Length: 248
Image (cartoon, rainbow, N blue to C red; front, side, top):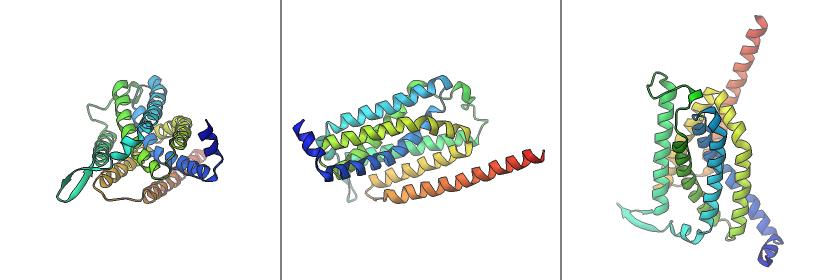
């Protein structure tokens, strides 16, 4: 308790906490987009529960991993080399997560552009099982959690600060989950844009796994720009509908 009080009196700790909270929230956007798209494919009466369980599991998983932070840090140590390229367990996890995201996003895009697919069923009935949705959410939670914790370790050595940042970020995700999911469900073109984001994130994870560092600022700037263009398209469509209605 004394140690926590001493930490709370240090301005540098508050600066690190604010930075970590922002970082965790930004990194959580990727996870939240995936959760929103996936849970929207469940029956309507299961969607909210699945989102809460998925985000709750993310919190439990990240806090649990923070308890083994010394082990997590060692995941960055090389375990084998291929053609002079070293690979660590973190690299393999990022590559596996990236491949999963590419597969999942590509599959969802195929279902969106091919409505005649025999595997595509009406949204009201759900197109995925509850257990399968939770399992896929947990898999991506693991990938994003390990990546964010390793990043956090590079910013502060105080585990309590990391835990507070994780809790705050997850609370933000819980608050934003329902509005984001509803917005995605109401706007089919946003679904395609979000799936494109997931493909970009998957490629980024794979590149990171192969040692090619991609600045996160570039990724989120591209996402913000694309979202801005889509926002203008939505505004234009809304005004055209309104003009058509007034003429009628």
